[in-house]
Length: 160
Image 1 (cartoon, one colour):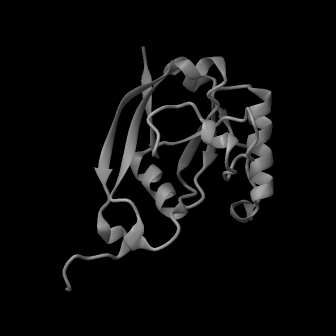
Image 2: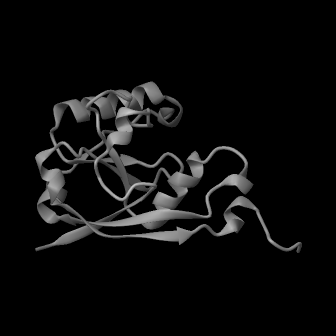
């Protein structure tokens, strides 16, 4: 059996996607029953996505994040939909990207949907519809806590 990997950084250690019911994201609007999980093709892309969305004083950011490694069965990869080419201003047009993601979630045509990463547009993220029957074919291989490198926030313990 051929397998591939996807990555997630989150406070959660599951793939329930209930956060999509409570808050909008780049590729969906919040709604009861609208579950979604954002995944990345590489752990570095997952980290860039998290860093792009952190808000507030860097000194108050958490000391660590939870990284999740997922194994995806080849049959799920084969059924993955790929986002059509987007307009040049797609990163600033949340209404457009949310409409695309909402339509995909409503259609339930695949468990995974490949979309570009906004902070790293040559990289891919994958949206997971946890309500699609193939979603159970994704396996969490492990989750672990990883300490942030404070240099990401320009924080240093000692003066240079």
